[in-house]
Length: 237
Image (cartoon, rainbow, N blue to C red):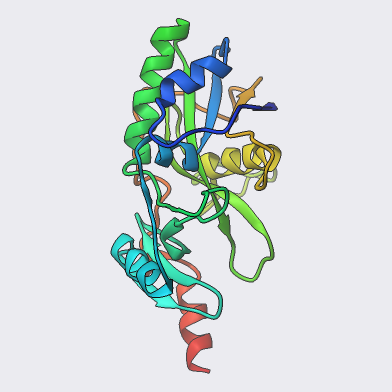
């Protein structure tokens, strides 16, 4: 698998996203995946606000969240079935504004995929819209797929044998987030100006390309989340 970051000029608020993509990508190979940072998607939708002070910022975070809890450094929030800092609101490289998350990353990913298929004459391609995330008790950020299209986001090993014939009962691989992390690693988090990347030479055993995806396949309800008992007991101790 090869991940190629794509250098661009600075994306402007309300700029046409598809035009921006095809300006910087002259071809896209069959069975490859285009990765787009959520920031340029949000900017294309005009998803920016100005907060005059911390109180105004707090109101915006609460409005954008399904649930919000203040912590030492940020607001820990639940949004779109994911835990994240401050409802995913980004202040970096925002020129004084707050950039919100895209309205519907799954819908946008599918729309871009259909347009690119027609534009480049390809049959099987994927799209990932990424965002940075932290993991509990781990320093630094990795990435998640806020939305994706064109491939299955989960590789399911349940019921299949391991190398000694023992069947898996729980194991699944999050394909979408794994690919998002590989791309964001080379795209960078600072002033690199790599808002796009292409993942090529993907082994067919690793990614299953498909026309429709379920946005719920990578989501686990809190009652089934393996970490819930630990954090509940730790808080009480």
